[in-house]
Image 1 (cartoon, rainbow, N blue to C red):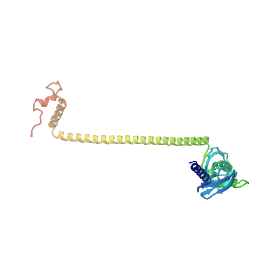
Image 2: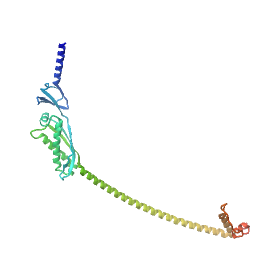
Image 3: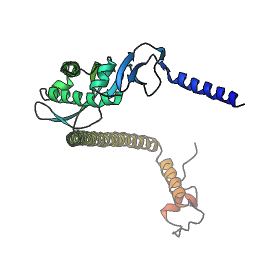
Image 4: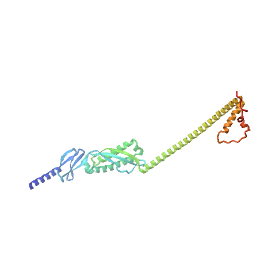
Length: 298
């Protein structure tokens, strides 16, 4: 029994020792093998590899993919005309020489990003100091980014300690004034828009008053003309009616008098509640007393 346990324990120790000597390098990574703190080997191809068990040899990994570094600070920079601007940028970079990178930069990607951020910002500051705001917003912006990329490449490749990295692209994503200037610009724009709006409203109100005044004038003129025409037509109608009455009544004076008496009676006794006190011998009731004044039948 003790022999079986010893064999099992020995197999487990052997498997653990064997597993510590095997490691897999992903196609997206570099494998760096250390021997007593010194770089022993850099593996660039993916696959299964062997090494000595710890502490004799250890392995770490570096990303070989294209990495993106975005600007993290919002410190303003001065242009050639001493304007304070804030820019946002990003850099596309990758590790190309793991040995040089580890010796001169650091053990992981974050170390390279931190140092690259400082170099890129200094390059942008130097180039922006030579250019105006108009240059940053015009086609010269491409030349600015090309110059920054050139300066960054010189910094990471030149000198006695190259970084072992490659900078693929440098881009500006935003150029803006500092917040205080931006706020002032917005206030001026707002005031200008309000002035234009008030001017348009005043012009519209004046035009509205002019249109209403013209409409009122035309209304008064139209009403006056209509009243004049109506009175003219009414006068002409009254004149024609008077002529017809005179012509008709002139043919038989007694009939005319009788017809007018009937109209007077209708106007006088038009309600049952009316009470009229008159002298029956008056001329008004002559046609009611008899046929004396009635027209003779023909």
